[in-house]
Length: 191
Image (cartoon, rainbow, N blue to C red; front, side, top):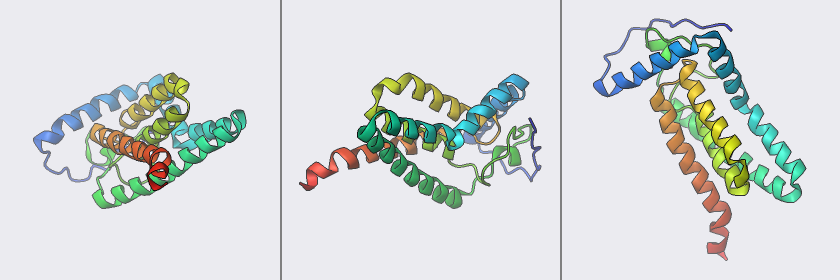
């Protein structure tokens, strides 16, 4: 596993409300420096890049026919909106990743993009999970566990601050709930 070292950009003054965020990031990242931990969370993060979700959508479509295809399409549409939303938020906030500005934090895997806020992996995972569980509640143990691991991996691997992940959970939850409302409630209102 290769690690990217911090660029040691000039450290901006740390506001008291950000100090806890940074301390948590450093502690989680140090834990991720253990070989087995880093390999495990690196694999989880890689699966969270999309592989896990695409495989799930394909499995639903193949196993459950039309209903599975509808669920997969619902997940895909939600994922596309999540992708657009987190890209807009990242360009707007332009928060540097912790391994770039926080001494002691290293990236255990290369980032997919430049900015930290919010965590796109977490936002996608939460949105996908909410939609998938509305269709298939029995998947809760698998999806909630995987989503939690994806969220944790982002901080452990040095790619996000805990606040990036928490914001992504909130945004992803809102997006998932809105998606469910649009698919299930909106057509009834329009009838």
